[in-house]
Length: 157
Image 1: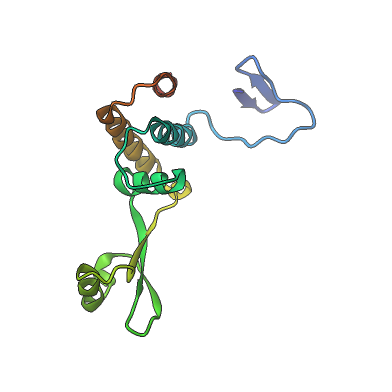
Image 2: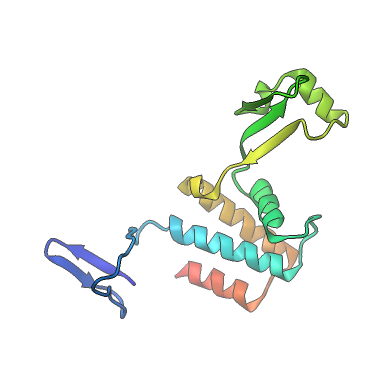
C-alpha cells in the first residue's frame, strides 16, 4: 500500500487503501532501507534453500550468521575471557590483551567470541554494501532460481 499524506488526510497511490480501525506502521516510501533489508533476508533464505554454498553449517541461523560475517557489517564487538575466567567486552580486536590473542591463535579456541552487528542496526550504507556483496556472491555461486530472479527484479522497480 502506498499513500501520500496531506494536511487534510491522505491520497491513495495504489489500489489497496488503509482500513478504518486498523493500526499501521508508516515508513517513507523514498527510504529504501526497509525494502532492502527484506530483500537481503529473502536472498539469504533462497541461497540457503538452494544448497549452493560450502559453509559447514546445519541450520539457517548458522548460515545467516556466516553470511552476516562474510558479506555484512561484521562484528560490532568482541567478548573475551581472561585467565581468571572473567568475561570482558572490547569494541576492536586491538583492545584485547596480546596474551589472549596468542592463546586463541595457539588453539585455545573459545577465548574470543565476535558479536555480529544486528541487521536491524545496520546503517543505510551497511545495508546497501551488504546487499551488493550478497547478490554478487549468490551469482558467483550459480544461484539462478525463479525466486531469486523475482527478488532481483522487484529491487529494480
